[in-house]
Length: 551
Image (cartoon, rainbow, N blue to C red; front, side, top):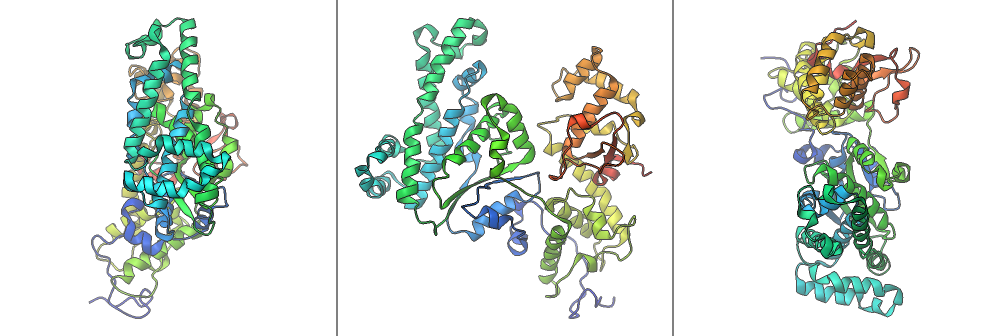
């Protein structure tokens, strides 16, 4: 029988042999409730996001940075929370609308309607939650009492008018209201076309059949419909809620919106809906005890900005709303130690168990085992949890995680992380895995002159036969290269830029400069700073998966 490891177990309880299926959670907040509840690490973000006077309300971070974990913690710690998922809004009805798609393609952006839709749905949910409205009858009784004395105020007449117009719908399911609102807009847009354009929006190739003057006329008519959206009344209702309903600053309310990166609407409209949501959030500022918290992936925000620039989206105007989520080495250590202690506490000992007790004492490549593991993450909780879990799997039946087991775990972890990275960026770079293969078995850092240009040229020429269906942004550069409008080195630079954005490689623009990584919010590098003389570094996370050669 093995001796008890007293350094691991100060109170000398049962020998903590690592067992099959031991893990420290999933790293996915939606399936990590047991560890989340016991091991949540407050590093200041929760305090900021639950302070209604603080304008920061958009949890901005990359995949695995803890956005959903914070959303869940707000639900656990705050009394009044309303959960929103875009799936329940039935917004696919908007994406699938022939009428809406026709006007979007025509250049009539319906952002004002989308913002109105968000504002209406959030306002209704607030009133339903506040007064526990579950039926048409309860709606009538409660709203009549809650808003009756406001009718005496002329400034509130618009709000009352709005409630009276849409009040019968307040008790309906959220997705039903969205569907009815969308159908109303469709009817109004079709009506605005007039007899001379009757049926035009349902015809295949209808846009091509319109003359320039006809397009201008249709656009003007549609814009009038959109501008007639009842925003004034709705704004007045929000003011009424701020003054007469949600006026107690000691009783806070939170609307929590997550999963915006899911497949809840066609991308063409999804970006406009997200932009309109951000615009709508600003409209609720007068309600002081209310905070609308949105979890938003960094790459999705960038996509939204780039796809809505023509609608006046000014990024700097929204910076005060962002709470950038990032983790330091010590904070990640605290998280991992907390989870390890929770795992062992349930089975072996009440004494805290740390990474340094469980990991080998000798160094790995001149780094401590803990540093070695964290260096192979983007400094995000999910990745650190995944690596430790792989170490536990490889160490089944042992007292500690040995150096050999760390190495074995790294191979599995590296392959899984590369697969996850390609999945994460699939909408931006559908052929990312093919880009990565072009740089397999490269040294850990290299310059463009060291790349296999023959293989890259073959890949580029072969990709042109695909017609751009799966090549993403590189297809356009491939065409330029084929037409002699771009050098191969310039094309390689564009491919490397894509890999930089995903975090797979870092770039050192000059020999005396630090290596920049896109996943780090503190360092950014523009395309103009990168040159043919720049050095590129493959992130250690992917060394094993890519067969990187260490210099």
